[in-house]
Image 1 (cartoon, rainbow, N blue to C red):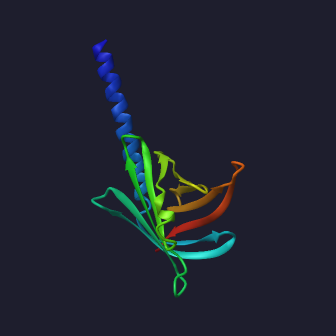
Image 2 (image 1 turned 90 degrees about the vertical axis):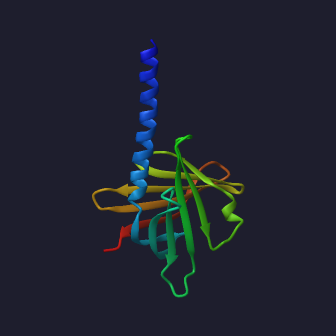
Image 3 (image 1 turned 90 degrees about the horizontal axis):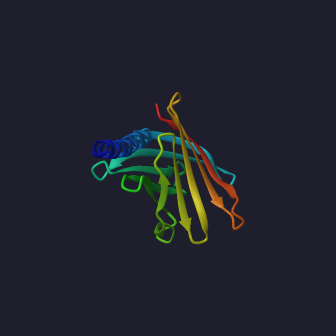
Length: 163
C-alpha cells in the first residue's frame, strides 16, 4: 500500500511539472517580434509587439505599441506561472494608468491556449490567446462580461510574427 501511495504522489507531481513545463512552452511561442492587427470596440488598430522573458525567466512580458505617430495606445502584459495553484498569473499595464492596474488576472494552466480572467469591480474581462502551431501565429480575443453574465467582444487581434 505504501508503494502505491508513493507512486500516486509521484504521478501527481510529475503531471503538475509536465503541465507547468508545457504551459511555459506555450508561453515561449509569444517570444519575438510581432505585428498585431485587429479591432478595439469595432475600430481598426495596428500595433508592433514584442515578447521577452524577464525577471530571470519568471514572466513573459508582451509589450504592445500603436504604430501611429504619436502612438495612441501602449500596454505591457506580464504572464507568469503559479505552479502551486496550477494557474497563469497576469498583469496588464497600459496608458490608462494605475486604476486599471489594480487587478491581477488568473487562468488555469493549459497546453492548448492561454485564457486569463480579470475580475474588475465594474465587470470581468477575459483574454483568450490561441496559438496556431502550423502558422506560428496567434489570435487574441478580449471580451467583457455584462451584468447579465453574457460575454461581448471588446477587441480581437491577429498576431503574426515579423519576418
